[in-house]
Length: 469
Ligand SMILES: Cc1ncc(COP(=O)(O)O)c(C=O)c1O
Image 1: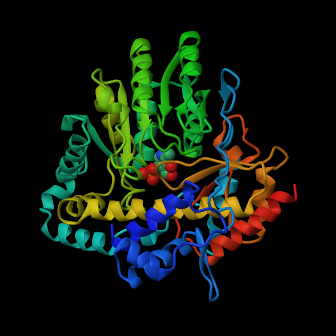
Image 2: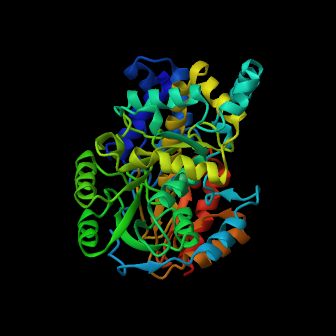
């Protein structure tokens, strides 16, 4: 972290804790430069950064002031109540119609599922692809197809080891993104008509997979901060013949919640007791804002019950379609299903990522990416506090790039979605994240793109639309 970034963080902390109140003047550049022992240009850079994050504003000839409402965060959403015991899933039409409208590149992309592509080292990856293909033995381009590229598998296993998970290489299956890993994992343990416990709200592709495989959803409410409700899960595991669980333990999409280590232990204990396999979707694992990465539930698994699914789509290489599953006792079945469906992800994409992981600077890139996403989260939260109506609630995830908003009851987010799109703003309305199409007054907003005047104006416009309901 650079000096000016550290200084900006210190001042942002003072604003967040209310020590510097909205409307208050912050120290002059000369004063701050003397107090912190840094040059005036470092202070200027820090103040520009805080301005970009929407926390302070300059007033002509008067200096810098804390922006109105910058220090008053919106409250957290309420935990949602438990829904019906089981639900037939039928959301695909709605999801496709919403996703279809998100493709316009000229919209303010709050509805997008990805951060800005400019945040990824795409040119460096292209060099890795060229280099790795020049040195790949002709035989290996075919040999690497089945299990996966061995260098890539070694690199993934190494990252697990550093994160505290000892993983035999035989457990790893390289897939076309995490979505294939999740699909195959679910197929390996279920048949049409079976019950699967999922989160409510859930990642919409999870709902579509259940719909396609004719599985029934047992929706378990997700607490906005603490993750899946373990009391409801305990109850459902006792009363229903659940065949699998599909949960995100960290930075849940769309809510952003994470289970604490204690709750992960409790969840694993429940699954072990009932011998129910867990499909752990952990695609945002590398995007944590804290000091240490969250430990996956997989790290507790001494029984092969957890299928841990990951991907490079969110952390390094969107569009390369390289993901994996550490499949526990189901790995062989998953590998066979992969052979019967897609055979293999692209070998050049795998070798490019393997080369980058060995010779690029993945950890440096990740540090920068996390830092940027956290600052952009600050900017969106501050902007929402300025523009959204009273009664709005929002999560404050400790990783990832989504915020989950709960608007006042009368707001219809599908209607809001249409109004906003007509004004060039996208968002992801609540019902696409629910098997029973609930969360009508909720929406997911993406802060993965650099905060700009357009973003600020879009938030202001959304605020006006929200007040019109
Ligand atoms: C929660 C979640 N799981 C899985 C995926 C799919 O990941 P991939 O692009 O690697 O297939 C996504 C992508 O949006 C996601 O948000």
